[in-house]
Image (cartoon, rainbow, N blue to C red; front, top):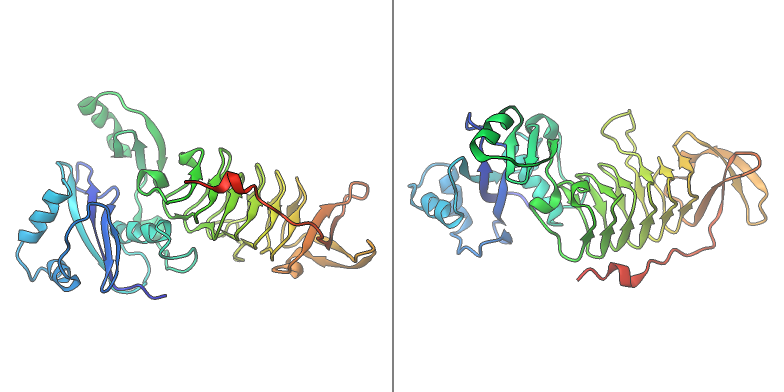
Length: 328
């Protein structure tokens, strides 16, 4: 789905040099669709907003928007247009694309986020909002004591967006740009990076790295890990299909098909040698785990006597507790 061009209207917090630290968008719209309007503002036509961006209109509407959105000292109004899905060019574009992911408009890996680390500044995320890392002491002198929750390029998702129908036990472990479908539960040890997430009801007690997507009705057990692509040379997009289970403290380095299970404690990388068993537990071949990518109905275990990794047909069904995922 091509949603561009689109326009976002929001408020940016500035440091003492008038440089942007973040953007909180209150309005996002395309030519024919209103995606976000937190203040229920009566908006002019898309073309009118384009005139403001192109500076072919007077400042009256911009002043009205600043008043409606309560732009304060140390902040500025942002009216930003993305014409097409190019590399990320600045912080306003970065935040607008992160919003599109967390608002479930764009699925992970469907929009261009190249250069996002370059354009995003490292920020101290505090209980009084974003603060320039180099101005912490000055901010404390002017505003009194405050707590710093993290120092990072990405803020916590729930400081900007709370998706409907989800439960997040520790909000600091889910970054803005995470895509969480309704029915998703993220427990205390769960982590969801930007440009990653769930495509349906899911239980997340492990780590979803950047670029990783989890199919509906799948369960990531406590402390389990999915291999990302941001570092380490891994260029394969990892995914978990539907109705899958990653056991506690397991790891995944290949794309899984549907109805697959990885035994607790087993880290399965693409280069792992795997003994493939038939339904009578006879070894039929030995392959790299990557050769089994995206195949359905597989059970991965480690032979407790020989220590070898084995794969056999999975005859079990993964069923999530429906009550736990009614996140009204």
